[in-house]
Image 1 (cartoon, one colour):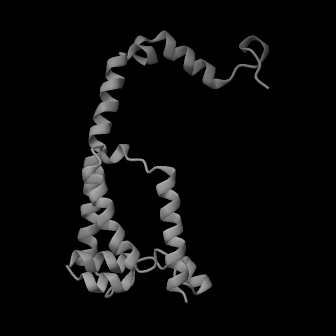
Image 2 (cartoon, one colour):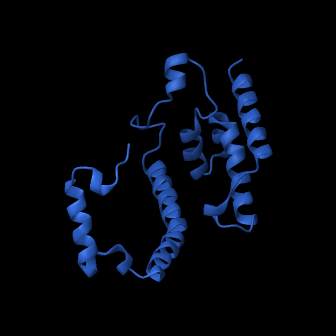
Length: 157
């Protein structure tokens, strides 16, 4: 239960807050609202750059250390514990094969990923929105879930 300041024992944090309010350069309200908006805008502008750099770093890692030759990539826990292939099994190897231009090999490792990645890229490029503002409609999410479920069933027959 929250008690008003006069009804409860003083907390060490109370002195810190009082000191912040007394010293102008520590006051939260001392920072102009425009600075907060500018910082938000700057972080929004950096987000696509950070995402792009992360994708390029992952692609460089897959090219330098192919998953078919190096064993440090994580194993699928569903395949490990249940012995079935999940919709994502083989995605890392498929991405590495796609980066090397081996489409048939990528289709062998994971056809769902191999076909959905170009579709997703086209959708991102032609949607007219920034990648950070993309949101799939619920119907599309349901279709993707049904597709992944069907793919998993067929893949494990």
